[in-house]
Amino acid sequence: MATIAELRQLVGATQSQEAAAMTRVLLAEGHDPMAVLEDGVMSGLSDVGDRFAAKKAIVLDLVRAGVTAKACIPLIEQAFPQGERRRIDRRIVLGTMLSQHNIGKNLVGTLLSIAGFEVIDIGEKNSPWDFYQAAEKSGAHMIAVSVVFAPAKEKFAELLDLLKEMKVREKYPVIVGGAVTSAAWASEQGADGWGAQAKDGVLLAKQLLKLA
Image (cartoon, rainbow, N blue to C red; front, side, top):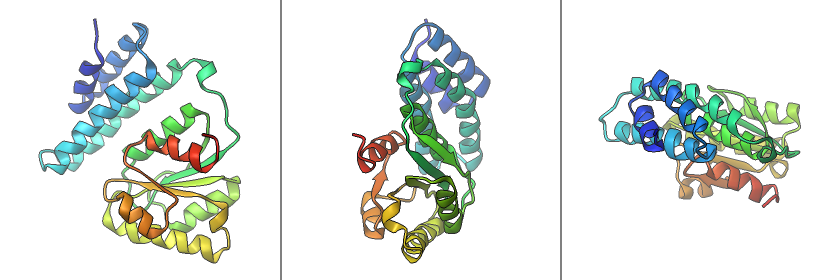
């Protein structure tokens, strides 16, 4: 019988085809989709991230881990009962500032979608203006930003300044997360919330949009 721990190992080893096959088996055997996502895929990705931080992995490993996650996540999304995927009339603009890395952003987007939010994913390599423009165009209720390397931290501050300049700062709660961020830094910048893990994005969205 397959175990979620085995899936975690496969994701951590960036074996995309094997991880996808294991995901199918676990779901077919009746494992909880959220447990498969969090304890299998997300924990496996965290293992790769930890190795990278300890200089025991390279950027290519992170890329492969992202590919592996992409092979598994759609299968998990399809497994959620429709009753657990009620729609919430709240739109959230989500993107990565400057960088092309998207693993964390994609996980946040997946969990927000599963929770019922409408996610406007603007992808990677975004500028402050991209976030502002997407929020205004889509009628968003919140902005979520992934910051994964140091230069993007300055751009995040510029985003908050831009929202103030355009007189819409109070209109959009702004949350942030990513490898180079911290709760103290986010608070200092004036963010409305910070998440250490992908699942924190859902909790913050519900709290700030008064849905919790």
